[in-house]
Amino acid sequence: MSTGTTRALRLTGWGSPPVLTETARPSPTGEEVLIEVEAASLCRSDLHVIDAPPGALPYRIPFTLGHEVAGRVLEHGPLATGPAIGARVVVYGPWGCGSCARCAAGAENYCDRRAALDADRVGTGAGLGRDGGMADLMLVPSGRLLVPVGDLAAAQAAPLSDAGLTACHAVSTVRRVLDGEGASVVVLGIGGLGHLAVQILRATTTAQVLAVDVREEALALADECGAHFSTLLRADTPAVLRDRMGGVGAAAVLDFVGASSTLEAAVDVLRPAGELAVVGSGGGELLVRKPGVLPPGARISLPFWGTLPELKSVVALALEGSLRVRVEEFPLSGATEAIAGLRSGGVRGRAVLIPD
Ligand code: ZN
Ligand code: ZN
Image (cartoon, rainbow, N blue to C red; front, top):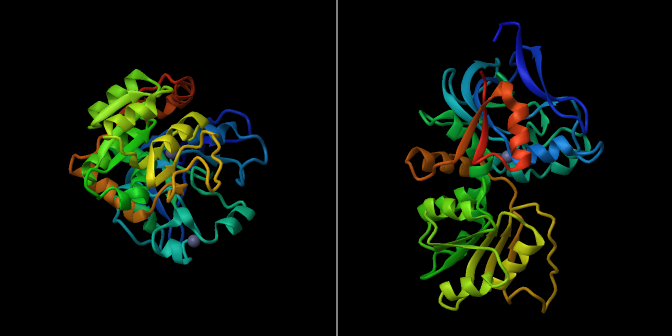
């Protein structure tokens, strides 16, 4: 890395692949904090952004990709607060207005001014319309968006900011019903988020955790992560799960796929007054009608990303050894291969880019 320029993986045109380009070295102003990136992980959301046709997303281009970022604080703007220079941190990715009641409470994922920000095409957060961390250096708007990670490996820390945080927030959303005696929770989709949800559920609840996926290797991963039971998604899966739950339905279902097939299974196994959290954007539809397919008293939520306090708790779980992300590392210069691998399903675990 030379002093005058730095590398960044930039989206320069809608529908065209991102390019690793030399850009001017950013310098923090105002409240900004400059981070030396140690790791930035790739996610399916990045593919949605890369593949988006013009006009589909409320973002201006060009911008640098990367919303799951860990690194070291390198430089403070004159008004910056937060972790000291040299601190190792993970970046909280959803960036709201920073001043509404939701943002003040650390829930920038649910910023009350989101619609206005989108109308102004300000971007949703790091790497999502604003410069992210698939780069040597990253400018973060404020120190409030940084969470210290101590000596946690960067490749572990980066995915916590979305895969870990979103899984944690989904669990928080349904936690209310998981404390009861003998409560069961079904996790649909044991991928980047699902395998972390299983670990978070085991570490923070007493519920029986049942994992479902269409791939045998995903079930093996669920078992490694501590699932009490795992099974392939088939026509008889709801019956198999009900049997396993002693004939009672699931207190909660976390659907990390959100396809028609998983939503059907979800409503089929849900207990009366159960909680269904639809996390995945798989395009499935669910008809809400009374009476209908949903059991009486059912509650449905559409959790999105997570809050700053939840990111802190996810980092704490990882530091105490209760949360381990499965990752595959790539050099930043090999971003194109990593993206192709994610697209083809060839990456095992979270693909993490390491500046080289
Ligand atoms: Zn992500
Ligand atoms: Zn806000």
